[in-house]
Image (cartoon, rainbow, N blue to C red; front, side, top):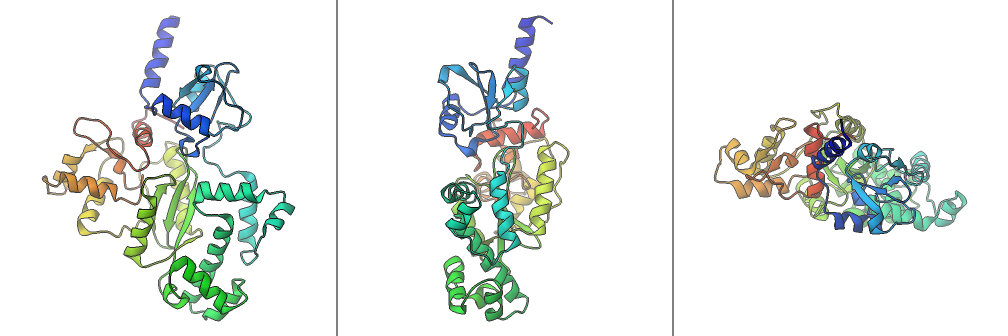
Length: 365
C-alpha cells in the first residue's frame, strides 16, 4: 500500500470517532481539565510523546500539538506515552497516595485524621482537599465525617441505641453525633435511620470518574461527576426516597465497578447490577424503553414515543430521558435526533459519541 493510501486509511479511521471541537480540547489541555480525561489524547510534535489532558508536564504551543481520540491511534501515529501522566493506564485511576489515605481511614473509621497527621504521612492536606473536591465533590474531612455518620446510622437501623452507635462511631457525645447527622441529613438520627442511607462512591472509567449512589440492594444513581444538573439529580433522589446520601461503598458498588470495567473493555453488553429507579409512571415507562434498545443500535425520540404507545409525546420522552439518573445502564445515550444527529446528553455530547462508538465496535479502550 502506498504512503498516500496509508495516510488516507488512518485519517478515515480517526474520523469515525468524534472529538470535541479543537479549541475546546486545547483549552481543556491548557487548564488540565479532569472532565476530559479519556475523551482525547494530545500528541506533542516537538517531543514525540502523547499525554492525557491532565498531564502536569509543561504545556507546548498550540501549533506543536495534535489530538487523538484514543491512545492506540496516538501510538499508530508514532507517539510514545508520556512518563509523567502514563496515558496507557486506565483513565481516572485513583492516585496511590489517595488510595493509601482512604485505606487507612476505612481500616480505622473512628479515627479523626487532622492536617498534621496527614503531613506526617507525607500527604499535603491542601492537595488532598483539592483531589476530593474535584473527584467527589466534598473535602476529605467531609468524607471522613460522612463515613462515621453512615456507620452509626447503619447500626441504629439494625437495633443499636443512638447512644451506643454514636460512641462506637467515635463521637464523644450524643449531642455531637446529633449535630453531625442534622448537618448532613437535615433531621435527627432516629428519623434518618428509619430508612437505610444511600451510599455514594466514585468509580473510575475511561471517560472520567463517575459517582454511584446505591443501597445494599440496588443502584439508584450513576452519573459522571461533571454532569450538568448533578445537584438537582441528588436532590430529586433524596426527595423521592426520603433517605440521606452518605459516603460509603456497598456490594452493589463492587458489582457495578466490575461490570463497567467489562463494558469498557468490550466484553459486556448487558448489565446485571440491580437497579431501583423511583420516578413517575411515565418516566419509568420511558426508562424501561431505553433498556430495551439493543446494544449497538440507536433510536429516535419519535421511535421511543411510539414504542411506549404514545407517539405524540416526543418532547415528554426527551424530558424523561434527561431525568434518567442511571447513565450507561439505562442507555439514554442510544437516543438520537430524527436526522441522525446527536442531541443533548448530561455527560457531554463527546461522551455520548464515544459510548456509541464503543458499542458499534468503532472504538476500543
